[in-house]
Length: 140
Image 1 (tube, rainbow, N blue to C red):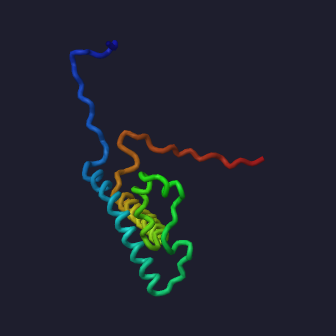
Image 2: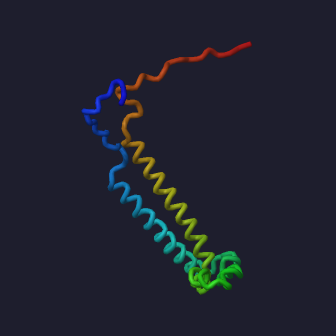
Image 3: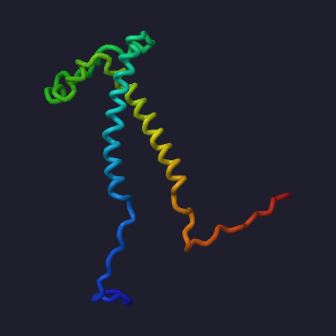
């Protein structure tokens, strides 16, 4: 028991000032929606590029070849075996990741702009004003 605290008075903890639960749900949905959109856009971009004879590196085309340990293990083959049947898998993956990075960056930029416009004041009413100290120019 502390010197200045009474055990008879129960004090409630202040409510957490974390984000609203809607924003947490929206973030969870975005973690599902952005990769899905990116994969679909990557798939369509590669197919469009192949149809219009874009130059795509030959290393990204064809079916993937997995390491030998995956072919020897039944459990690993059950997990990764389907990937070997996807034609141009590496091209889909690379373009999908590029779309994911671009889309996430765009959404972050829009969020930063909106937050900058409607954000609360940087200094609260209890903050001291910033010092108006101007150092003298140092000369030898």
